[in-house]
Image (cartoon, rainbow, N blue to C red):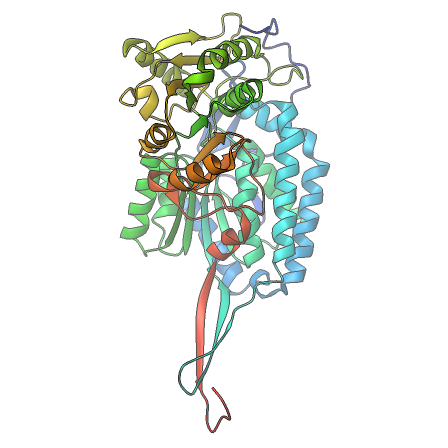
Length: 502
């Protein structure tokens, strides 16, 4: 099963010193009101890395007070956009200066490849800050051409205090995907990272202060979903909440928002994204995209191409190449520069993925490769796993597994491919591999998903709005749509008297 490093504890990089373990409220690191802490676990070994302050309702209360004060009376929303942008640029520079340490924190917190954290996540995060820093002084309303003797215009005003609830699979990337447009809009915020991955978020809070972001603008509460997350979703003084995570928890966030103050909700939820490969595809390239689309970040990606449909003409050749690539895929210590896949985030996720693999076997899918924990590792490592002959009614085709498990099937016609791609409750992303422009156009307009990638995958960019259809949620991250999510439109109308024209 690929080559594995001999001992997961023989790390290739010195473990980072953990400097920040407390809550960050109003510009200070503080203990939780209760004094409680929780453990964060290194998925490479299953051992405790650190004890982190456990924030609860009372701590959220203090953070919201600080954010409300900073919004209602502080400088941040009142600064010229260019000044907010300048501070955000400094924040981006600090991120890059601390890339090594930040990447290492995510590696020991969620098993993310150190090389990917350094080469992708942190540069992407810094670029998100710079992109929205550049937009901060370009927030303009419209002058309206009214149909009566009235002068009308719109103002775009920051929405207020925002609650961000962040998932554990891409802690740095998603933190800045949410925080950057919120800062640019002039809002203040309370951020709750996932309890599995609190370390990098607390480090970001420290860097935000160094960059000159005023106290109370960015608060970080580490803690659990049912307590701290629920307190954010139902808080009467939070104006908007943005959540990335499972559909099941997304429902609870929306319910809490409805039952409290009808705060604006944005949800980026699960996915079961199809990758559709047509007969005219370059088989080697398609197999590489398919393996990368599901195994990247150990399958812990909401847009992972977990359902792969291959046209019958190239199916056999494709399967041969795919299995070869999966067997050569290197699973090992995420600090090892050769590793392509680290451990799953925690024991719970590890066991969940293995239980889905058992479902796949029981329901009669053909296991082509993988299907077990990696034998020579202590931590939560799972072999790249591919099932063929998968039917739509099987659990492995319906449910988001969030692990390195591919469901593979073949199809005959373009109509069948579209139908099967759409036979899911999700609609986050989809991939199409073809050289035929007409096929690409037809399929991309027919598949009900928020992002369609043609002959590429994971092609995310600050300029390109990202978000789901159906039960993958609503609201967009990235692009100017994300900035507008944190702005209110206010219409202002005054009468016109004796005007020469309307």
